[in-house]
Each structure stands twice: as C-alpha cells, then as structure tokens.
Image (cartoon, rainbow, N blue to C red; front, side):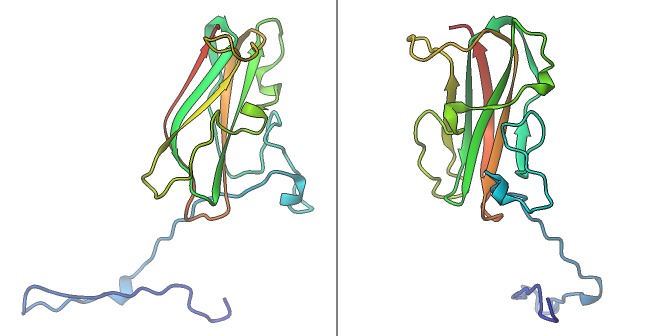
Length: 189
C-alpha cells in the first residue's frame, strides 16, 4: 500500500457521567476484517493461464469460490423428477446457479464420476425472480426438472440417488447472495 493508510475509524465518544471521560486504549487495539469469497467464473478466460479450469458441470472441481453441494441422497423408490426450492437474497451484482446429478437405476456408474447438469440449461429458476431490494428481501426460487403432476415436461430416466449443487457468483464481496430454507424433493411423476 506504499505507506498509505489502509483503515480509518471515525468515532464519537460521549458519556452520561460528568466524572467519566471515554478513552480508546490504542496499545491493545485490533481490527478483525471479514471478506466474503465470491467470484464469477463461467469460462476458462476467467482463470489465469497457470490455473486449470474446471467447469461447474465437471464431476469434480469448480473454480467458483461459493459452492454448496448436498450429500448423495439415496432414495427408497426410483424417481423421475426433482424439485428444488429455497428463499434467497440476490442483489444485482450476484447470481445463483443450481445444478443436479442423478444415479440412474439401470447403471453401476460411480456417483462421484457423474457430471452435473444445469436446471433449465443455465442454472436459472423456473420463472424470473426480481432482484432483492435490500439484504433482508428474501424471494422464493423454484427449480424443476422432469414431468410435473400436469404431465408437462420430460421424465428423467429413473434414478435411485441424486445430489444438488448451488453455485453462488458475484462481483461485489460486500453483497453476496444469501440462501435460506433450502429443500429438495425427488418423486415419480
């Protein structure tokens, strides 16, 4: 930082007692700073020349920093559709992409070697969700793949296990997306 100050704190000290003067003890002073780890990597051009690129759809690895992956969910009965629901705050500088992978009932493939698939081809929700107005403005996000109860859509091949991956991207570490009330359902349509 070439000798420039890196932190400034402006305070106002007051006291309700006329015999007490507020003091800041500068000999034992410390600052703890926190930064959210977000980035926005969608292609190999987003990483350096010496960093290997791993697409979000790769079976393992991902260059994005903010990732949540559920454990492998084994089903008692085979299913042909998946629904994911959660509430989220997503500001204009952030994005949320949701992916899934399934273990087909008719295969002996290793679950960890199966690649991820985006919901709606790009990880977007079923319907457009407006940008949050502030940090407590949670909106409902819905994702679905398969044939719904009305017979709309295309069945997935029967699967006996699945997992969900959420990739949170952003360009402003002060305004990352936030997710709560996550739930997922697998069912036979």
